[in-house]
Amino acid sequence: MHAITIPEPGGPEALVWDEVPDPVPGEGEVLVEVVASAVNRADILQRQGFYNPPPGASPYPGLECSGTIAALGPGVSGWAVGDQVCALLAGGGYAEKVAVPAGQLLPAPEGVDLTRAAALPEVVCTVWSNVFMVAHLRPGETLLVHGGSSGIGTMAIQLAKAVGAKVAVTAGTKEKLDRCAELGADVLINYREQDFVAEIKRATDGAGADVILDNMGAKYLERNVQALAVNGRLAIIGMQGGVKGELNIGTLLSKRAAISATSLRARPLEEKAAIVAAVREHVWPLFAAGHVGPVVDRELPMPEAAEAHRLVEASGHIGKVLLVAP
Image 1: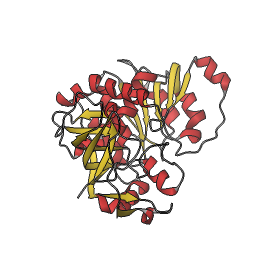
Image 2: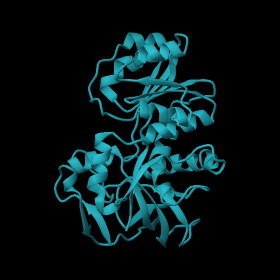
Image 3: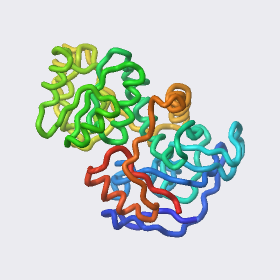
């Protein structure tokens, strides 16, 4: 088969479409013939040499894919050759085939094209696990999403609205904010021109956000805590704004607030399987009902992964950029 390899870390040109050995599904795994994968920030970090795959994972980038089951490994039940699926991966999505633990498979959701289903596993599992399983967003509460036009952001808007929450977002252009509004966002904050702390306070009559989904990390830490409501929950899922920040414990205590930080890739298989099962139970029916859907900016041929990385690094896209297998 062919896959995107990284012979040496570097810029987008480090991504090389090359012939590699076919994966063989092990105990509890299935072999998926890949239709499409999607570009995530973690893929860019891996390409740069900063985010290696966990032990035993595929060395090729790609944290999600869609496709058709081509073979079953030993001990797999509940799936059949020919099933159309999408999958959460620890790596290997930028390839024509990938071996996937059966617990990380999802049936392609009803009403979603199989190619576009590649835009779902990473974002849906990230949003559901952080916003709902950890931060426990409830109907009537306010969610603040940083990077509202990103893949994560566009899915967070839709899922929060589907459960009856109010949604505020930050983004850097009017075009991105307009798209967030189309998806249901109630409060639109241009972070280049407005102070998100002041704006979220204004929109909530001074209360603040009950839950904040943050991809920035250190840069926003202090202001995120200021923006939280009493009993608020800050869920950190990224470090685009750095890894070290100062935290006023007094402010955190006065608000009886909580901070969580999680990632998906290195979690044990059983934890990933539990998240995937929860997504299948709670989120997949929303796709069938037409309440949520993938947001895809564009699709590129998988051998053109370098160009896809350039697009994502430039942050001009809205939603996901897909890589379609030949």
